[in-house]
Image (tube, rainbow, N blue to C red; front, top):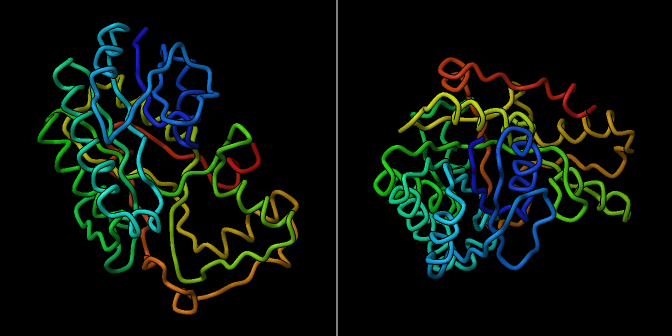
Length: 289
């Protein structure tokens, strides 16, 4: 059984990958300040602004075969307010980790973002990135650094992910539910388009990559449904039995811009489907699970 190390296991995506991939792999995880609640064999502390010596020792100790890198400063607002920290974590820390993986003959899979796209109408192919946010620029710059440090790496530009959570670090679905239960209104964009993807389908893509031996590639990974945030909210409300009375449709120009918003980050995942046979689950079916 292959041994994989998942970074950012305290976060939503990392938690789900640990949980779903534990069925097929021996899973290890990194943590920062937050304990890991997912079922893993062992953990190691990871600070992407500091030395990775303990992580490298951990990789050697447990004979890790692959590193799945989810850890990041992943919110646009904090990245814009702390650009130096964002660059250190998302670019330089990622580059250092990719180098450690390469030096220890580990596969390296790096999670980038659909926010590297913006210009024109989607769905976007892998060939037209145009990052406009500081956050998305750091992720795109990290992609280039990853390929230099670990030429065999695979990069996944992930859409908005939904799925299970541990009750503490949930997806945007849990955030929406908590806000609605607290009596808050949700202002949801009618003019921002995404292609949400189920966390279990992301785990399935990781499995296909590891089993196929795919190397030196960039893949988009998103669902088949291109949808704006307001219509997505209505769909979720209908399936989960939430009231949509507190969901307010807005256009992006009416919202105060602490960080700029991107209109169309929808993804064309044809490359992943054709090369690896990956297929996303229909969003209505996945939300009902």
